[in-house]
Image (cartoon, rainbow, N blue to C red; front, top):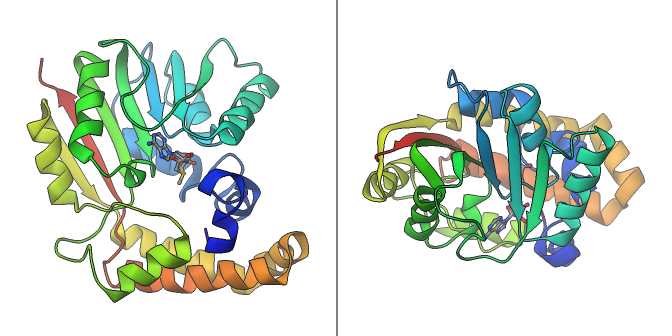
Length: 262
Ligand SMILES: C[S@@+](CC[C@H](N)C(=O)[O-])C[C@H]1O[C@@H](n2cnc3c(N)ncnc32)[C@H](O)[C@@H]1O
């Protein structure tokens, strides 16, 4: 997630680096259990689900295997990730259930009212126009369809400042972080009701400290062996800043669930 990494593969780090920290198939924290927590006690059985920013496909597999989704369509803007997700689905014999579509940022390349649910994990942070992307979700959902979103957010009033600047610079991405309340207002304004907003800041602070400690120890040695000292130093440096940003509430993950109004 550092600038050095960002120069590889179209703006995202070599996926293997994040997978070493966050687990196979994932470019975000919490693994399969966090995907299940985003869905909470909602029933996805028989549903067709769109996963926006599907990355390496780990979440799509969980949505099918653990949450009961009949089919999952992953959408991503990076060919390398789409290829990797397709390969993962092939290896599991799930190509009839999971498909991965490559596209470009902007309007999503799907028919209106074609999904029962939209899921996304830690990808909406990349989209500057939140109203547009939540509006797209409303367009793509059938009536009564639901959104299940996990994302990197910020605390109210903390979206700008030196710590955020340092976080962004080390991450090497032009992130767009909104607060949970801001996202809630956008979701309500774009045609959703029954809006649930869940702050995951306290949970992730514990996780992030554990991730940093692992990077300082055995995981760090394995990381350095695989990617070299400079990459390891950059990664650890990023994680030190990530922990600081989460502790200060500058970075504050959250979940958003809601139902399309009609
Ligand atoms: C942090 S990764 C998360 C991937 C995956 N959801 C996970 O949890 O492992 C963010 C993903 O969003 C994708 N992305 C970036 N901009 C996007 C956009 N405008 N539309 C859809 N996906 C996007 C990236 O290519 C990347 O796969």
